[in-house]
Image 1: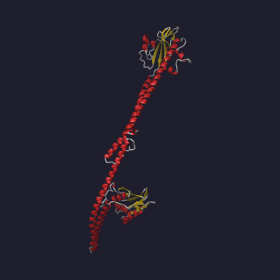
Image 2: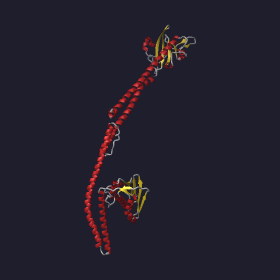
Image 3: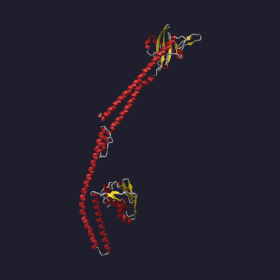
Image 4: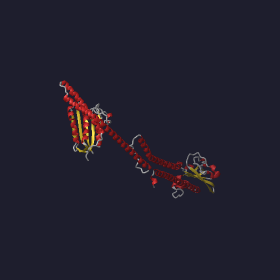
Length: 494
């Protein structure tokens, strides 16, 4: 029984069923046609016999015509079907005259002098063809319908009757619908055509159904060759060989995809480890001179400041600029180290608004100086989030500082909205700054990409990294001269 669950077994069974069904329908159609032909032959023969019997009765009767015999209620010569088949019954005497007929036009007529005028057989030129005329011998040449040009489908049968007055003939004209015969002959062909059409449609459907998995496999293999390992074949639920093949293919692509992800993670980990070690060493070597420079500047400002007021002002300005540059370099080193080091957050339930408030305090003074309005909206019943306070503070510090820099000193508004969002808490941070160009939106979270001339390009990369380790999401929506909105989602405490 296992063979019939296979692709080959099912295909073989279906083809055998199609063959048996085709032969069965063809046999039944031929059987019905044969039975119909037999019934029609029997009906035709019965009509012919009835017509001959009727003609014989009319020939022997001296006071009744053939038409009168048919109209008698007690006549037993013809039933309804035989009567519908008989066109005419013509009685021909030994002088080849028409002595009686169902057709009024063929009957003898009386003359004024009391004599009778007969129509001769040779005058009947519109008779249907005479059937089996060879058995009539020499009398055959007296029949005008031996070789008739009539287009009628009917047929004529002549039977000699030996009487005391010589040889008479009874000619029976029978209705024969050749179009009906042609339909009976064509019916098996139409049936065969219908069966073959249905079989062809079923075969086409079977071929499509059985070859579709192969086409799907071919298309999937092409996509895998192009590097798309996420493709899956949808036919793995079948129980035949194609289903097992599709299942194995999906397992293979799944393992390849997991292997690629593991390789990417391993490469990233190795890259991060190398960058971290290298960065720590470089940062240590750079920060020592920076600390010395910073301390020296403080010493110069306290011990060697000029007495002249104008020179002291210039001196303070230059030393302040140097300290600012040292602080900027120190911040860049800190950003580099924060990005290159592995992030190991200390997740704990914390209040969502408390984290935002801590970061807003960092920019409140600058916002007041730059005429920037800050608004914070918190919806009711906002749950606590699962996060690391220090890490999340770094996220919002970066977002708020970027917003302030985008708006500059010309005023604007910085809005923060906190709301529940299913299994997350949603933070919307929006500003009315200059916005971000569309071609840059897909790159802003990449390390070392920055739209600012003095930026390191690590701020938003660090934000993305922290959001990822919190199993959250961050999205950005921006329009030029219409501001930017960052949407952060952090998992809520379950």
